[in-house]
Image 1 (cartoon, rainbow, N blue to C red):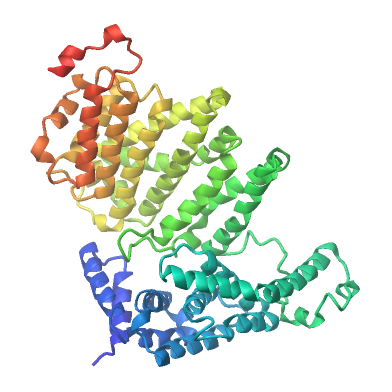
Image 2 (image 1 turned 180 degrees about the vertical axis):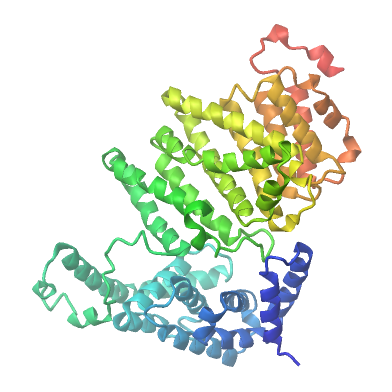
Length: 553
């Protein structure tokens, strides 16, 4: 009979197999959550993570095991006896302290996070030596010690409501008492760093200020070297975490213009790191499947962090950054157009070859990512509207025209004309469809092209199709939500005079109970859209031109 953990390993393997249907994945999620909530499951997981080879042999199993331990510490702590708590603490400390120098950052950070969560609950009553052990570890292994001190400090200021307010304040005050010893140690390491940066002999520092034995705990490699080209998505986001406060700092001191050419060089590198065309080996390792509701996937977290860094750089000079980001638009856009062209020209073989290839979901994701980045910068362009030049206006018009073309392609359902397995690309297709709707909503206030009646007809046709009960997209909440938000934007912000002249809008207004299949928030957005248009005045129409009597009827 298989052990419970062997069953978990088998379930995880099945879950992350590309051919596993979504319905089966949801069943697996239920089984995994049931295992995680078992009273003794944490012991099995603790045994797995204490084995250093588990991380290298099976990433998915290791991450599930550590998430189970996190769940046990944060949600089931009061159910653990003193002996179980001691076992958790001693095993995790021993495993962490014996990590190899070349261990992965994600592995190191996760162990440190679990230990810090224990310290938050046990220091100083159950574990009076917690901070003393952190300091001692820093003196013997700087990388591990400083990582643990950092995660501990994050728990001190964390707003996470996983312990009572009294316990949080008690932990804060107890850590504060020990701060002089910690800051004294860190100051000595900073002196070593200053000497290293300036090429000074470390022994020139008086022995009263320096403990020369600390040098032996430092890694042998040069920690101050340029590392932006290191492999791995997590390594790259670590660099962005360093750059973010730097950019904010020089902006706060009005020195960004002085360093802007250097800072702007980050944008092309960040864009390259977010696209499969250039960074496939790293991106394909990121998981894009949700294990729990209302949480971002690894893929979404990575893309969001990259785009937010670009937006930070774009704040003072949005036009320049917009041009850099938009320069990547053409490639995935032309790929989508090639699919439509294959269908229109009867190139069945070429179309089916593309639909079955791995490049399809990759191009869909690249399109969505670039679209998301452009959308994030557009509000910054609105804030600096007076600075928009002819080139940026040309790009905005091109973007608007392209979005309308893609929307026509999406509502034509041309991807379904042949019988192909949609499970390979369905999730990425749904995100793309939703992102196109979000992009149209974002650019509408700046674009006269999309406000033309011909364009609005296509947009309203798309919205009507999405809201219909027999639509192929039925059940895709992200598309329905994006569509309802677009309708709300048109009726309350754009407010075109001709809105009630479109049959699609009349159809939506008369739907009433036929919208009950939609999520409640989507229904609410539709109703608010209708009411907004009926009570708000038309935009750019004087008082005499407002047809209040006909609207009231």
